[in-house]
Every structure is written in C-alpha cells, then in structure tokens.
Image (tube, rainbow, N blue to C red; front, side):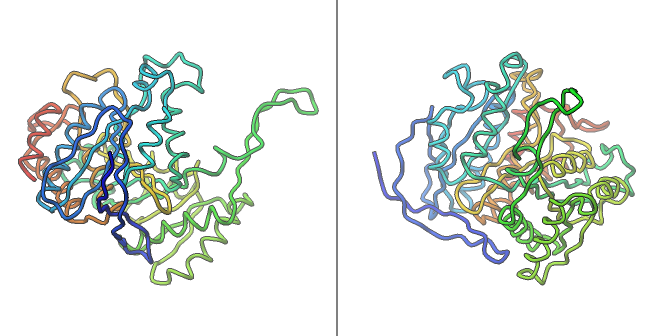
Length: 399
C-alpha cells in the first residue's frame, strides 16, 4: 500500500528552524502496529514510537495521547508506528535492535523512545544487552548531537539538593557530541606494557568535521535561546581539546551574534554547582558531556522530569526522557510521564519547528504542577499524589 502525502522535515539554517514540505511515498510499515490521528490536518508527521521496556509503554501512552490532542488543535496529524527495541525486542526476536525497527525509524520523520533495559537482561553478554539497541539506533540514524536541557521548575525548586538562591532561574542546555571521542576512538583494548603489567587503553580523538558540525548545532541552539555559548574542553593539557577549541573559534565566525566563552571541564563541573545560572548553552565532547549533563540534571532535583534529544544534520531525530526503565515500578501505575511528554515537546520544536504544539505541551506540564499534582518520585508535602494514568488525564484537561 502506498500513497503520496505531504510531510514536514526540519533543517537547521542560520539558527532558525526551516520547515520545508516534501512529498514522499508513505512506506508500508513492518512494525508491530500503526495508528493515525484522523483529523483534516494541513500537515502530517510520521512518528516511530519505541515504548521499549519497564515503564516505557505506560509513559508512551500518555505522550502520544497528549500529542494527538495538541496536534488536533494546531491542525497537525500524526501517524504513529510502534516498533520493538531493547529487552522487548530481545524477547520477541533475539536481538535488541531488529533490522525492521531500524528501517522503520529511518523511514519516519522522527523517533520517540521511552526507556530501555531491566534486571531481566542483566546477565546477557554486553554485546547482546538491551542498551546495545540504543547505541545501534543512534549510529543507524546518524545522530551526533545530544541535547540535554536542565531547567529548574519553580514548582519543584525545593526538590534540588542545592539552596534555592543558587538554583533558582537555572535554564541550561548541554549540547554533547554523541558519536566520537574516547567512547569510539581506536585503538582501544587491553594489553601488556614493557614491564609485563596488564593495561587497558582508549583513544580520545576528534576530526575537524566532527567538531565543526557539533559546534554549528550548538551555535544554532544558542541562537534560539539567550545567545550565549560556553565551549567546555581541557585544552591546557589535551591536544584533542586544543583542536576542539580551535574549530569552535573558527565556526564562531559564522555566528558573530552569539557570545562565545571557553571553560576547562574541571572548572565547568565546579561552576555548575557553584553558580549554574551563569550558563545558557554548553557544548562539549562525548565523555565530558556525559558527566556534565548528569551533573546538570541533578540541579533540577529529579531526573524523572528531564527530556533529551539526539539529532543529526538531517533525517529523523531521536527523542527520549533521561530517566531509565524503572522495572521495579513497571505496570504499577506509579511512573512519571512528564519527561516523556517534554521529550515530545522537544521533538515538535527541534525536529519540526512546531512551536505552538511544543509550548502547549510544556504549558500543560507546568499547569498540572501548579495545580499540585505529583507522581511519587516528585511528591512534596501538601501536594496530591497521582499515578501515571491520572497524571495523563490531568495533562489532557490542560491541552
């Protein structure tokens, strides 16, 4: 079955989302299910949804329902195609990333992932574990820029372990290079040194094109925010960081309207705790970004509220909450779906340039928090504790 439909895709052009219409044949899905929101919409997006493991299916239901409601009001239609990844894919097919899942993701306009992994698969060899599905998905989609926002919401400010006067107003975007650096550099492995001692070694390497493309994305993101970018590296001791800094400075020539600063990674880690509000957008390499984004996430008080995105220069991006699969509460209606909804909002903003839908989803999250509703992970004295289903219902009432 094929039909020609008009879909929308985003390219990054001088800091502004450029949404262009392109005709493409609707591909027959090989995934486990597909549904389309039946509205007379002027735009249609094909979204691959990957519920994954643990609480994933529960929170994905809330996010897709919220997208449907917000999309209908904005004259946007969604066709959701569900596919297997992670542990659920291992159980069904024997592999964490089936070929048909990757093909379906590549054929879509964007990919919305919930969570991967769980105790059930912990004893599998590392190459066969659920997390390999995520790594393969990133590589297969060619996404290299990981966007990790850390925003302290006023309603949850007292959940932070830092003083209110330190974290109030914190709104940071960490742009982490995702496919290079020490995690992927070669040679790597184990060996024996001249003294006969066993050693382990890795290689931290970046090419000029790898730094240029992540720098460009970071400058584009900074332009959408407050216009400030801090490049984090360790150029005082690492040659790879010296190259990084050199290329970021060179790329800045095309973004003269953005304020650029530089900071060594050890100082950046300290400054995130000491004075987080000084940061707007941070760009850094893979291992530094892995560490700093986790540190920044805890400024907010709950990792269960944080979305993320992984994007490339073109093609579908990957959008997912930062938190894990929480197998200990799966199926108990205890999950917090808000990070999944906020990940959908990031998808609308950064993939499609649909600011109206993105803002509507974010406002709904803020409104339910203002009304005092909390899931168990963010529960506070005097608030009303609800489960995943009821939180979803309250969100829909706000849209």
